[in-house]
Length: 173
Image (cartoon, rainbow, N blue to C red; front, side, top):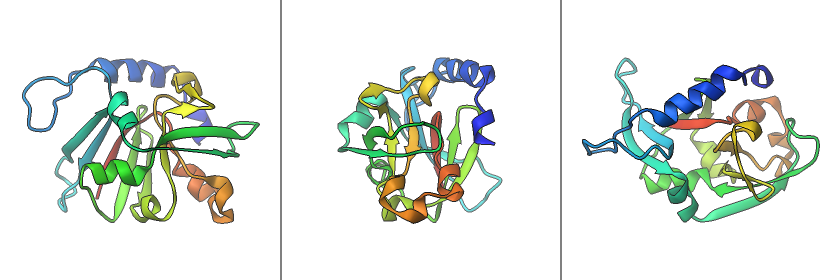
């Protein structure tokens, strides 16, 4: 269950992930430790490892057009204002298209999303809540957030389960 998956290991895992060397696509030098999101492409051969297509640090995500909306969520008592780039803009910046996405959190929690969610809804990769940068205490640096109050269909467990916090990677299939 999503509410039980945050624990000390997730916090420690974030530290290890941020400290581990990551290679930029096409580069032989380690990426900066500030990388917060990887975009990967899974080939038709599901046994093959997904290929790194792009990486983003927080500054590069903030250079994309930013969206904000206020919505109710099952995780916060009051409506919260979330800010970040649209998921579709992040995927488009890497020229990625597919049928589905696997959203992977730091603690390896995974949620499968149809690629069409990024096109149909104004889903954002939130880096701020109520104008404050996100942290491990409030769902980490990135949180997939749907505009739940905009459509009744988004106010369901199906979409809440797709709302991955502590997001570290999107794998396009």
